[in-house]
Image 1 (cartoon, helix red, strand yellow):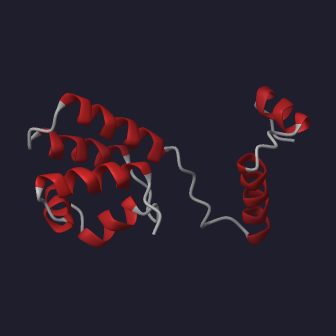
Image 2 (cartoon, rainbow, N blue to C red; image 1 turned 60 degrees about the vertical axis):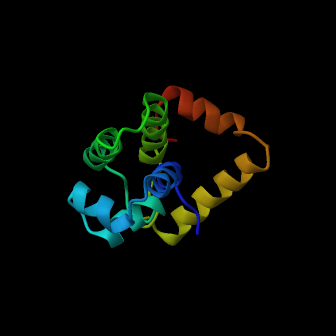
Length: 121
């Protein structure tokens, strides 16, 4: 089970506050399985749900520092690009690129030039 940055921050605060996933989901006006899927990165965190989550914690007296941390976690989690709708060959390309970056090999020069231009190859 790999939680998103939002999932980690949200779960930690919920536990500290003694709130269940179900309680939070009800306040966010979504189902608890859906909230769990967002925390796990199986579903995309939307701006609307992120704002509701921040408000959920704000109304429970969470400190400004913790709210800032939740907001940063929301920002990081909304940058996650879902790959479930990609074709298998496209998923393989994404995985190869991610593996290269995680191994510290960096971005190939031709790809970096393409990214800098903002064009398709």
